[in-house]
Image: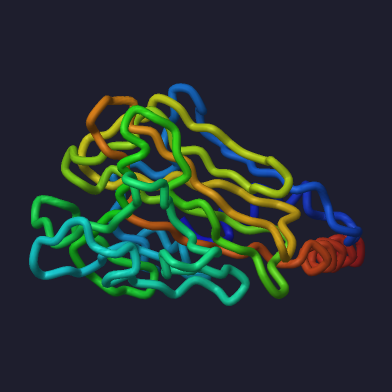
Length: 258
């Protein structure tokens, strides 16, 4: 699906004059419990595939050629996230972005040939890896705990989460919950269905501002089974004022024709 599809979903609601910062909200448009993936069994996110993630992505331990586990989260990370999203890969930093509960620190894993090959938004191909959170084994935990919003973020954006790429390992079947920490906004997807072929869960954020914090909570729902995701992608939505002007121009054109 193209960006036009995503924008069309909200065109009616966005055809308004710009206002002061709106209340932060997160929306999802499939069943939440049990959860239905936005895109089921999709591994190509480029223009030739789903055409999503065109404003940036982060995929963990991507394209590894030999198996590795318990690796640093930033190892072989394919990261083109936009400048208004700040990711810290240093586990010693107070702004570290990933789960760091003592004894249950998140790690990355890759190079496992049974896992899915993915085509990223810019056409890069490779064997997928994973951000793995041991604290999310039958327990809810923020595998992503601190992606900071900085600078001048767009008024709305899509956050696409890729999961179910690990051939039955590390399934976060009980929960994938998108959060914004400062406002408390969240969408909690429960009882997901995994079959070993990557799915995409697309969350729509509105009203996020500099200083906010993006989080992602996982839970495998099974004791002893860690939870994971392959990565995330971002699509910014244009300024509401731009869409409003476009709608006004189209309306005036219709009136002239009449």
